[in-house]
Length: 275
Image 1 (cartoon, rainbow, N blue to C red):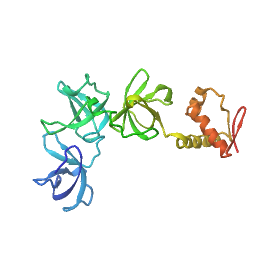
Image 2: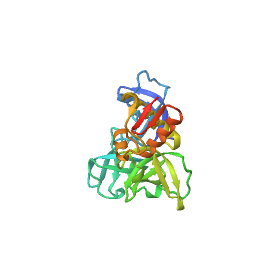
Image 3: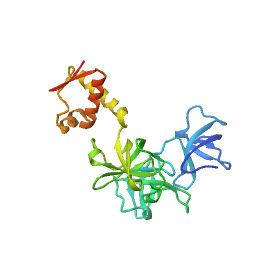
Image 4: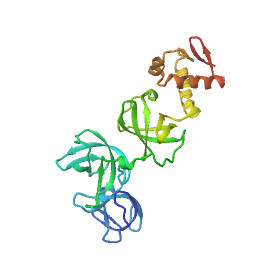
């Protein structure tokens, strides 16, 4: 059975001047010539994405959309009408968001967090901003220190609410952010703490010394670039460390402690020196 709005592996059943037809158990689904790989022939199998064209016909493409059915993604609005808005999702035909599925008025150029779904009435792929029912922390499949994929959902008074692995939510507190982020950003992070009622605190990067090893490597590289010495130490101003090294003071202290234990640096009163 063909899965609309998803990737399907289909067999070529015939070729025509304007492309090839792929087996759907009926008359076939067209893969336009512009997307046909060189050397493709009848009997070959190919992974394609299937959706409806502007004339409501199923069509295949080898283009990769920014999301498939069930995914929650951040997409840019490229046009708007009285009936709804259209979002760029990486395909030639834009993704439609009905007016009834918008939380407010979508504006061209705006970035919106939406869930991709199949419209029951038309069978077409569409998107909705109404995603809260698809996010829950009731049954967590996470534990503290787990690495997670984050999608920045919205800004709050205490930080940024993020969607975790496409199904849970957690907060990235302002005090734990040491880079510019905005709604729609995809980030790597980990679960810092799971509190009462399964509320999740998040942190960016990797946890523990896995994260520090990356910062430590960066410090060694900077030492090489600056003659083996950097004028930063455990009493340096946090903002100076962040502005010049691109890391928090806490990460810096852990990193130089790691390097010191490995006897790779000396910690002096006025900075650190590579051995």
